[in-house]
Image (cartoon, rainbow, N blue to C red; front, side):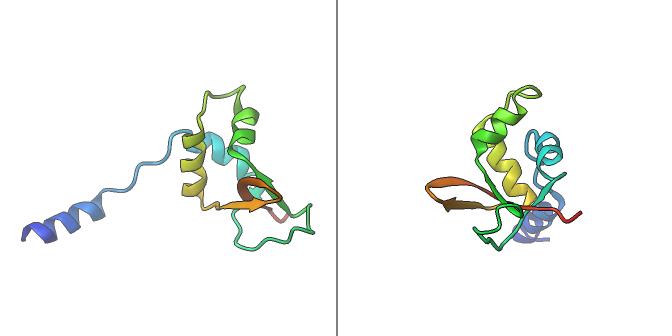
Length: 97
């Protein structure tokens, strides 16, 4: 096996490490919310924009977490950012019950 094939094989074997605090953030966010690609600003019950700072404040009693930790976990979970009414945050859609 040549070096290039060996490198490709090694990269397939190595899975990306799960973000720090993934379980805490996943438990906090994914119980009620899920990632979404669509957004209807008139449907405030179905959609929510949550900043990384708001997530940190909500989890402050459980963990000492930083902005980068939140960003890595949210991206890993499939959430995306949005700018709406001057607020930059994570776009969440309420899970169907």
